[in-house]
Image (cartoon, rainbow, N blue to C red):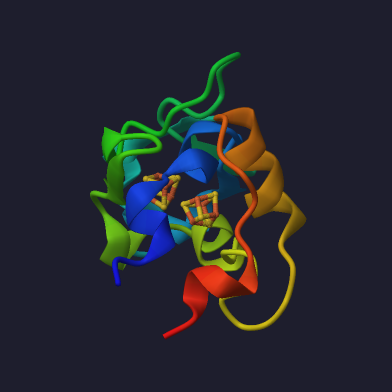
Length: 114
Ligand code: SF4
Ligand code: SF4
């Protein structure tokens, strides 16, 4: 079964993805600074996410059909923190909200049933 996130991508096109600049390679971290833009003296955000209709420029594909992170191995901490609802048996209001915004129902435990 395809992982639900690979048919979704909604969270990457809903939220401002902001984090401390030291997560970037310019600060000794792994997130390419070239994929970010200045937000405030301490934070940057992923390009494309600080917008009225956010969409991370590193998102590949079409939301709700087939989408994946183009920089998965070097994505920033907020992307690690946002968990798909019920993948580990717990709800995820951020996941639910993003999916609803893009016209998809929230995930249920059945989405992860074998
Ligand atoms: S909104 Fe939820 S299901 Fe969709 S990509 Fe993000 S974590 Fe995955
Ligand atoms: S870096 Fe990847 S996981 Fe994070 S918002 Fe952008 S596309 Fe989504």
